[in-house]
Length: 220
Image (cartoon, rainbow, N blue to C red; front, top):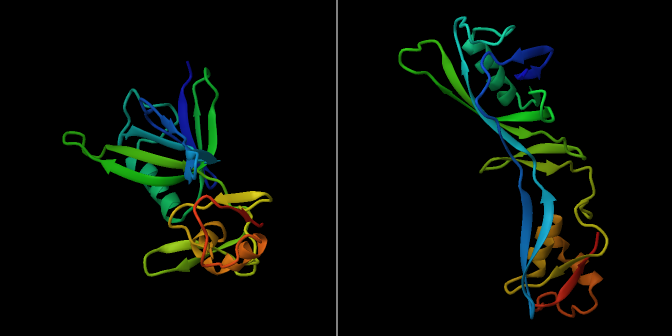
């Protein structure tokens, strides 16, 4: 059985010198829960999460008989590649093939790199790598520096009045503690859009008064 794991970054191919004993894969379904008056709690699937991968592998600093042919005996060479991709915020291609199950071939971001050196194996390293599936945004984004962290915000050239996540016939069941401002913040990212929701719901006579159990139309 042929088993190989390697990465493509830039114009180079990095074949792992020693195959990891296991590659963990994980993907989660995001589920939102709502409290509906007279019905109880309901669960609504919202989106399928990105796939995550993780593995630990040995990276020797000198040639050993068990190394994969064509791989380098240079632990720093591989560690620098992973850390550079991580620092530069660049996706890399992750490929794993075993000639039995479907091959993995996917663009990923390097989420974390942990390096361990063990006594008696000076120069060799054991790297634990965590990867996250890369999916480019469908719209342009700009980075905005805040006091807490750098966050992603839509390009200001885009209209603040619409949100591609809000589709036709979107509704919201009002829960205890909800406000129009908070609902607008949730769906549009801007609480001041509450007037848009109020205008789409003739049953709202006073924007300050909404009641648990009301089903509101959320316009696109």
